[in-house]
Structure formats: C-alpha cells, structure tokens
Image 1 (spheres, rainbow, N blue to C red):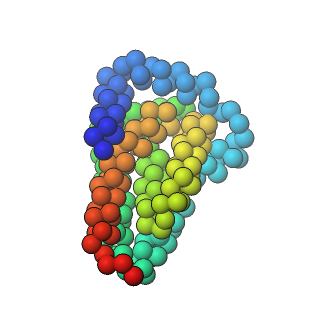
Image 2: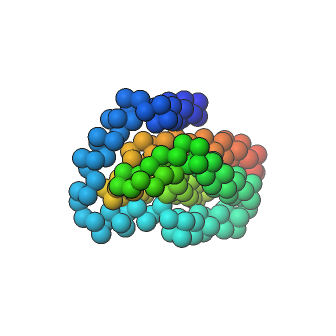
Image 3: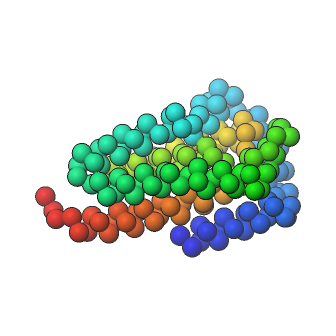
Amino acid sequence: MTLCAVVFAVITWQVVANGPLRSLDERVELRIVGHGSRRLADLLADLGNMSVALPVLAAAIAYAVWRGRRRQALAVALAMACVPALVAPLKALVDRAGPLTDASGYYPSGHSATATVAYCGAAMLVSARLMPVAVLLTVATGIGLLLRGYHWPLDVLASWCLCAVPLLISSMDTRRSSSRTPPG
C-alpha cells in the first residue's frame, strides 16, 4: 500500500512539475495514439464507464450480501465511493490537458480508477480466482484510453496506484472479517 502511495506521489509531482517523466509520458502517448482498431479501443475504453463497471460491482456486492458477507460488501462499496472523492479534486488541482485537446482535467483518469475499483473489488467479493480477469479488464481499459488518445499513460498509471490504496484497505478489512466468520 505504501509503495502505491509513493509511486502515485512521484507521478503527481512529475506531472505537476513538468518533470522528465512527464516529457517521456507525452512522447510515448503521441507515438501510440491512433494505433490499432478504433472500434476495439473504444470498446476497451468503455470498460471504465460507470454505466459498464458499476453494474458488475453491484452484482458482486449483491452476491456478497446474499452470502452473508455484508461487511466485506460495505468495505468494497466504500472503496468505490472513494473514487470520485479522490479523483475529482485531483483533476481540478492538477488541471492537466488531454493528449488530443486543450481541455483540462485529465489527471488522474476517472475511467481507469472506476475500472480498477469496480473489477478488482468485484473479484475480491466473488472469488480471488477472478482477480486475473479483473486485472485484465483494468489493463484493457487503460490500453483503450491510451490508444484513443483520451489519457496520457501517467494519468492511467496514477489512477491504478491511487485506487490500489482504498482497495487494499478494503481487502484488509475483508480478510479480517472473514477470519472472524465461523465456517459453514
């Protein structure tokens, strides 16, 4: 958890200070934007839409509640509630322009943050065996965002690091409360 917070802090500092990582970030994005199938990139980017990711998480929360794991479901729901509470102020504060626009508010990526918490949180609630699928969906979202030019790579990476923190906190709570739950 500490590593995620440190990496997030370094990325944010580099973006705000116009450091060498930001320069590299912008060169990389401008080389990859527009490559591959536009239709596939749109589909992948859309995995981070709330209208796509939240129903997946809601189904997992309902499943966890049905299985009597209310505390775990609440912990993951709170992690999801942290997404806009963390991302929106940072977007306003950093005020970074997007790759293909002068409009600002692109750092960190809200779509990446939503995908991270929704898919990984759902896997935590349903089965740890689904975590590779959740990570794949999260990475696919980031790839789609980059190929379409919706975000810089550091926007996506920062969101993953930022959202790992509430997810790791909720997973600690999930493990702690499941160890107190009697078998059966």
